[in-house]
Image (cartoon, rainbow, N blue to C red; front, side, top):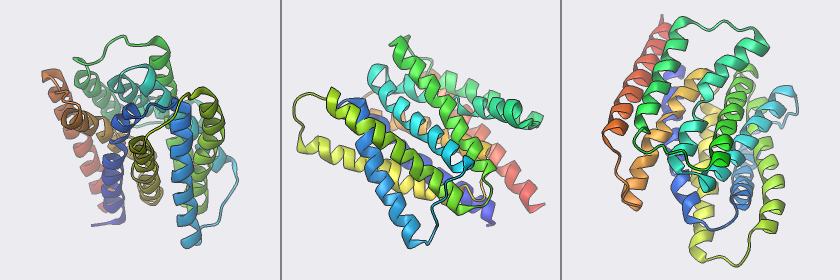
Length: 284
C-alpha cells in the first residue's frame, strides 16, 4: 500500500468520526455558538498538543490563515445550521464543498480541472440529492443559507490546505487557527446567548464532540492531507453524510427511505471508483 492509499484510508476513518457530530449537537441545549466554541477549544488543545509532541512549528502565512478562516467559519456555520434546520439539510448543504473547490480553484488560481473530476463531483452531488430527497424539506431559510456558507468555507479550507503543499507546519497551523477562530467567536457569543444551566450529559456530549468528532479526526486529517489531494479529501469526506443517518437511526429511530439508499449506493460506488483510479494513476 503506497502513501496515497494510506492517506485515503485515514480520510475514511476521519469521515467516520466526523459523522457523529449532528446527533450530539442536537442533544445539547446550548447556543450553537457556545457548542462550536467549546468544541473547538477542546479540539484546538488536542491539535496544539500534537504539534508540540511532533515538533511541528506553528506557522502564520497566507495558506494557514486562509485555511483557518475557511475551517473555522465552516464549523461555526455548520453548528448553527444544525440548530436552525434539519441535520440532513445542514450536512447536504455543507457538502456542496467540492463544487466550491472547483469554482475557487478556477476563479482565483486559474486551475484547469479534468473532465473526470468534474464528472465525479457532479455524480456525487446528484447522489447526495437522492440520499436526502425524502428527508430534505424547505426548513428554516436562515439555517439552509448558513449550511451553504459552511460548504463555501469548507471548500476554501480544502483548497488552501492543498496549495500549502507538503508543509506540516502550514497544514496543522491552519487547523489550529480554525479552532482558535471558532473558540474566540463562539464562547463569548454563546455565553451571552445561552440561558439557564446545563447537565452532566451535555458536558459529556460536548467533550465527545471536542475530542472524538473534531480533535482526533483533524489530527488524522492533517496527516492524511500530506498525500491526499484536496478534491479527494472532500469527496471521501462525503462519507460523513452517509454515516450520519445511521447514527440518527440508531439513537433517534429515523430510518432512511428508498431515495436515501439509492443515493448512498451512488456516492459509495462513485467515490470508491474515483479513489481506485487515482491510486492506479499514482502507481503508474
